[in-house]
Every structure is written in structure tokens, then in C-alpha cells.
Length: 159
Image 1 (cartoon, rainbow, N blue to C red):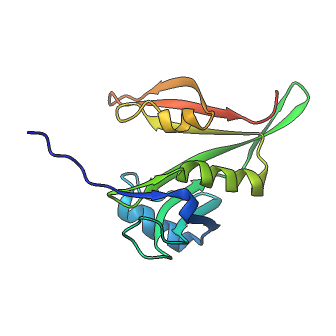
Image 2 (image 1 turned 45 degrees about the vertical axis):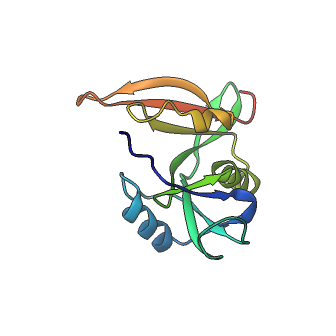
Image 3 (image 1 turned 135 degrees about the horizontal axis):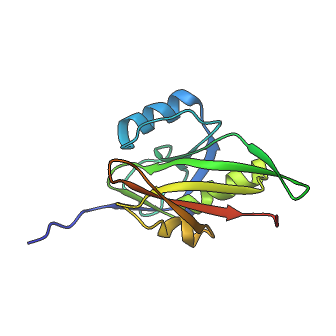
């Protein structure tokens, strides 16, 4: 018999997204993300800001999203500022419905990037959560150890 995983379901409408300091992001990701923390420029926390049907108290940090600084290149006379979505992770056993979209929108509003790219472990996911946010698959990278990553990109300006 297959064991069902029990999740706390939290709605993003009951959360707020705000910038967080490196120690907060680092502690959260080192604790919960399989690849741990890695250096990044923009760090956001998703916090429960009002009670809905959640089983966690207000003020609980339930997810972290991190983004790189810009990488700039000239594309046919247009300067493109591309950022990488480096990490997104929730508390174990927690699903924040709409959390990725809310974190992304906060980043878009604050930074105004031209495009955002990310990598997804192809052995774990096909990037559906990112694709629902408008990211398109751009390629695949294979590593010597048999691992694969999908490269996804969200173009926000024409170039």
C-alpha cells in the first residue's frame, strides 16, 4: 500500500512576500533545500500574514525564493538584463498555492528584469510550476554523472 504524503495547504492570498537578509535565507535553505543556499542578490521570504485554513501561526516563514543579479548582453542593439531564479523552496510538508507566482510578481515589480531563466532537475520535475508562470523550455544540459537539467526562460521584453 502506498503511503500518502500529508501537506499543509496555504494560500498565497494569506501570505506576504518581503525581502529577507542573507542569514534568514541561508538558514532556511541550508535546512530544507537539497542543494542548500548559494550566493544570490535578491532574497524573498513568504510569510503567513493572516489566518485562513492554515495550521501554522501568522508570521511563519513558509517559503524562500532567491534570484541572481543581472547578466547583461547586447542582443541586436538592445541591452538585455537577464536574471536567474536560483532557488525556491517551501517548508517540508507545506504547499503554498500561488506562492511561486506571488514571489515572482514581487521580484518583477521591484527589479523590472528583461528576462529570467532557471534550471530544473529533469530527474525530479519537468518544470510544470515554472511553465504555468510563463517560462518556456529552452534546452537541456547533461552532466557527466548522468544527471540532467532543463533550462527554462521567461522573456519579458522582445529581443
